[in-house]
Length: 341
Ligand code: NAD
Ligand code: TDX
Image (cartoon, rainbow, N blue to C red; front, side, top):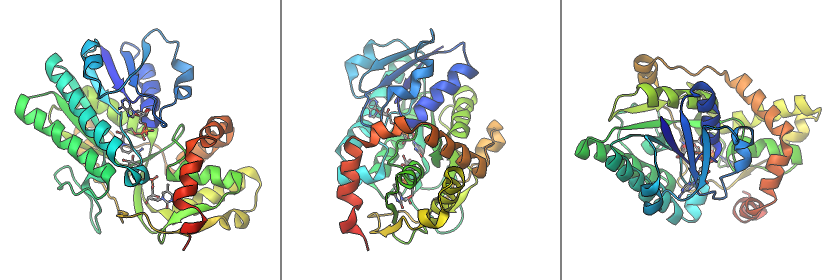
């Protein structure tokens, strides 16, 4: 089977391709990625020469390009994925996440092939108590999550209207190797290493459910191979934590691994102005994946975080190259000294 993986040069897509090529060497993977600021071919160095892997630089919004490609299924990771960027400028989010997804749905419809649309728990919005199931209403609160919710609804509409073979997955916050260092966990690690202030938004008590990226990739593999057409599957880590707890846990581990003093690293924590529209708590009920598809997350948070810190400590050239670019500018303008409370 020739699988068109879109956004495969990003964090989750690159981890997924590596997993897929080893779990299913019989598949061919065509990785279509626009290489935005978040796309990085270095993420795929160790597999780029495999005979069943091919990279094409391109945009999922490009109708002619998609039409000209040959494939038997699509797995759609391509997206603008960072909430803070969507607050600064939502245009690329609407373009890629909505129009791009619609273009892929249309291509699947014409070819009559399966499409797995990779989505997020953020589409459900915030929940004070209890957990979101696949039947919970969509109540997105950021331009990012609103664009993802739109793409989910389009995907569902294509199933209802055309009987498209579509599967939607909604996963909680991922962490692990190759995550772009604008997201909380890699940002805390590299700021600790570099002795930079660690910005904690608001009171630091917002809750996220964290899952190791490899557990997400395994769930996607199962949903793609065995999922039922038209179904939505929640994927979660059963691991809800307050942001400030994560930050402190990371700093403790970085201190142990680098011989630095934990107190000195804790001194870097800087409470800054809250993110506008900041969702207080995400909580996902992943029991459908467990009961129907027999999937369960395997990585303990303690080991997953430890391995992730090791990866960032061992791969400083990877993130140093990234942070020397536009991201530093972005950080300084958004959450620099002038925004401290
Ligand atoms: P990422 O930002 O690291 O990677 C996105 C990739 O998509 C990049 O390689 C980028 O170049 C590519 N891309 C962007 N616009 C494109 C376009 N128009 N055409 C082709 N390629 C394009 O994101 P990620 O964290 O790997 O997330 C992947 C998917 O998983 C996204 O759809 C995201 O919404 C979803 N998701 C992410 C998380 C998370 O915690 N990171 C959790 C749940 C769901
Ligand atoms: O510097 C920071 N300080 C801080 O307090 C950053 C970058 C984040 N935060 C907080 C905001 C959130 O409550 O940490 C939490 C996690 O933030 P992000 O890493 O930006 O993730 P989040 O906003 O929860 O969204 C993520 O999870 C679901 C991904 O970016 C999405 O792509 C995915 O859909």
